[in-house]
Image 1 (cartoon, rainbow, N blue to C red):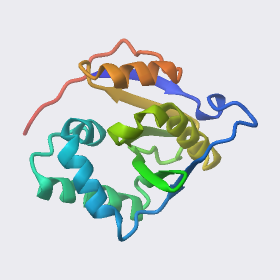
Image 2: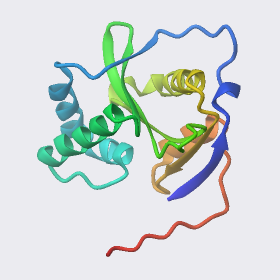
Image 3: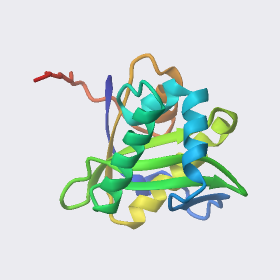
Length: 167
């Protein structure tokens, strides 16, 4: 996994930029949409979650965990609409107690990936307005599109190794 340096979200979106991207709360019609995205793009969904999601039940549980964290103020989560179409979702986890730092996550359904940069910039602007000043992102080494996107957004690679220990 590549660790990327913090980026100040307010420096990314040019002033006056107009976006058709809208963020909204998770709604009644979203669970079937998310399951369909999971079925069609498990790798993309797992990249968002940062973990293996072996089946639809695990998908539902992972989403419920994220939504509960957002409800308790430990994370942010929003569905992403482009015009009249829902094209993905975004989240912010590992938010520091002072809310200055967070780890961004972005999932855009494959047919709408052309909007990824626009959505990422709009999400950065949105959380900057909430007071978040820095992002720390991670992308799997093999995720070429994710690496290209994060670098295009201005993140810098941190010379650091990550370690995991299972207990």
